[in-house]
Image (cartoon, rainbow, N blue to C red; front, side):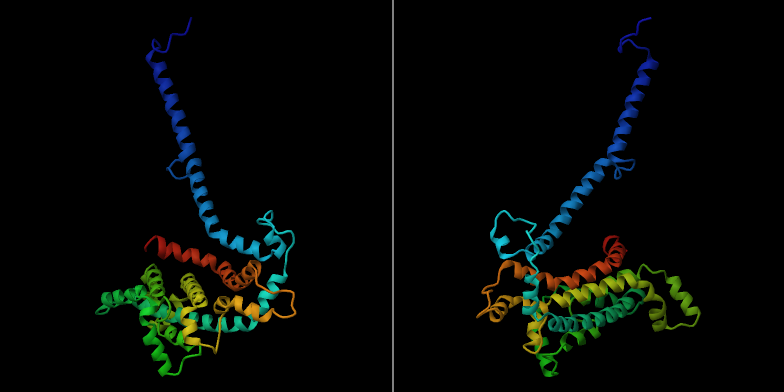
Length: 326
């Protein structure tokens, strides 16, 4: 018996063919988009392309800096040498190390960044806990005023703060950064308080109630229970505060004067310092791009190491406060 044409096929056969086509279409759609529309090959391919492209945009300056810092002068002048130098020219780092007076300057930089960061991390945690867990008159107004300070440019309060620190004899010392940090002030303190407040709101109130039943007071509850389980927020606030104090050059040059210096401040005068050190009988007469890149890499290297250590906690706190809005 010959097969009937598709148009003359019996109804069960046409229905079976439609079902087969529907199943094939569903299988192809599932393969490309996934069962929920966000776990298929097509979605993952687009997502990975976007992530790789964004990651390359952020990593390109760092990769360029590492590549350039190991090049000799001949490699810099040779247009055929793009990314990989013919040999690793370590002398660039030796010269940059000497120009920056690295160990001495690193010590003063850590002093002007680590101590204020520790002070801010503790004081902002206390203020953020108060905003998150306690109710008091004017709470919303105070919280709003606190957020307003985040958008006020530092140039607006620079002169009053300078005169205040001068009156109290704090200039040319790290105190203009440490003292405000002790009172939840200083660089970006409003952002840190907001991070803490958002994080503390995710902690169940049952923990505090259980501590109160056991006879723990407010400070004991905070330091013995709340703070130990808030390590991700603490690490991220310390990381941000450390980085911002480390990179601060405008206020640092104003408050520290000629008494102290930091690595970012030394980078601003790197060319002049290099020419003053390597002149005369030395074969090196001028600074080149590789030496500048080596000095820049030495300055950002401690921050890169710090971030690699804290990246796990950074991701956790962003998930809880920055993306979900909890």
